[in-house]
Image (cartoon, rainbow, N blue to C red; front, side, top):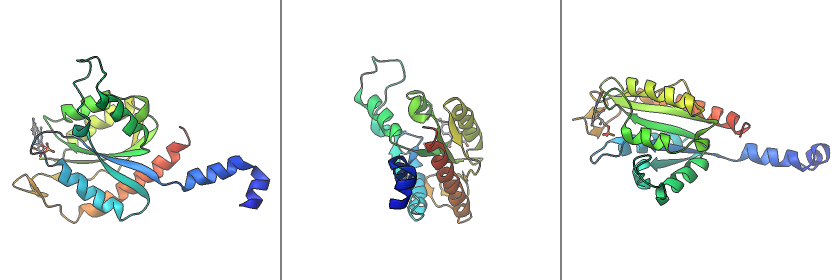
Length: 199
Ligand SMILES: Cc1cc2nc3c(=O)[nH]c(=O)nc-3n(C[C@H](O)[C@H](O)[C@H](O)COP(=O)(O)O)c2cc1C
């Protein structure tokens, strides 16, 4: 390190430290309704992610922030600032997406609309569920990601309400999804690292 400092000065040292810092990746629960299954899915993804050791993973529950419906208040609720601060502290995201009427939930859309810069130039993966794996909701989210300058990775685990849940409520994922989740997480970490240089 002494030799590197002599050659490149302290800036290089900072860059080395930055590159070695672990990324913070938020696993965002997209549903807020009572009886929702998203916490089960989020905890499953976090369990897989934590075994990788390549980032700090945390569950981010939109319902904790008690966001009002955008534009219906003065915007002084502490949850709005806390939501923006939470996103600002994250380097990347994994969206846990459920399909409501062929799209994402109103709660997730509202939460997406409530921030701008904190989303920009960061990567995201999508894990979705529904009768057709939540595919239609996930594709809608990809369109929104483009506008928010979120780089959504290709690999997309899709969970079926019929074969990965019992009675539509007890999450029992098939083992075949494990590889896909790990591939998706690897892509999110790689792109999150790359995008850090833009911010
Ligand atoms: C308002 C509403 C609309 C729904 N529409 C769809 C749909 O279009 N396609 C689908 O596959 N599932 C649909 N579902 C089923 C949900 O995907 C399923 O209930 C899932 O568990 C919801 O996620 P959550 O439990 O985390 O809220 C809908 C559920 C709700 C509450």
